[in-house]
Image (tube, rainbow, N blue to C red):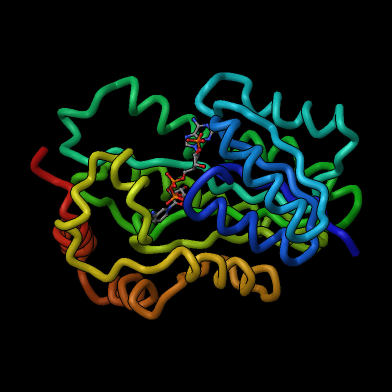
Length: 260
Ligand SMILES: NC(=O)c1ccc[n+]([C@@H]2O[C@H](COP(=O)([O-])OP(=O)(O)OC[C@H]3O[C@@H](n4cnc5c(N)ncnc54)[C@H](OP(=O)(O)O)[C@@H]3O)[C@@H](O)[C@H]2O)c1
């Protein structure tokens, strides 16, 4: 069976790796991000390497109505999406009081509003076909507040809770809904965009491949929130034994994003 998979944030980093993986699995793809050149180059590479159909939908997900435009693109091109991968997202590092309001609004729109809006638009057809998957790339930051990344961690908590709730609302419909919650991933672009000094992170930084592996595990299994590495699992498990204040304080210390 050939699947049509839509991946947001496919131009770089984790989303690009996921696009390569899904193309390797034989899926036809719709790639979404703002950088048309990067998406077109990737699309050409994937068509040549895997013989799959790859469409590029260039869209700024921080703009109002962006999700509807992505949905409209698929409808116009007669593409029925079987798998929706919400990977687009970004972080802004630094103390809350100094956070630029425009950056906050854009982050909230891309990391939360667009994720929920895309799910809302694509789920009904998946339900009607009684098959499909929604894969949300959340973060370990979504399990506790992270000082220095207050709004980012809150946005990822939204994704974690949304995923949890929807997985139950859509139980028995044939649709798999899960989130992958990575700790820090090796991707200089992500830290540069966030204004996050990577050298101040004092916990392991993993390869994007751990996320790819976790997504494959999620598609094959029944887990709801997938923690890609043993360290990620340990960080969440250990929260059962310490007050939340301590968990948040430690997360802030490990992330090294404060003081700017
Ligand atoms: N890197 C980490 O340490 C880490 C850890 C945990 C979770 N995550 C999550 O993993 C996801 C991918 O991150 P990454 O590390 O791969 O970072 P990245 O390389 O910066 O990729 C972010 C992707 O999102 C797209 N994007 C950003 N703003 C957008 C907008 N306004 N409209 C449309 N697309 C937009 C970017 O494309 P364009 O710039 O071309 O639009 C890019 O394709 C994010 O949700 C992130 O929160 C990352």
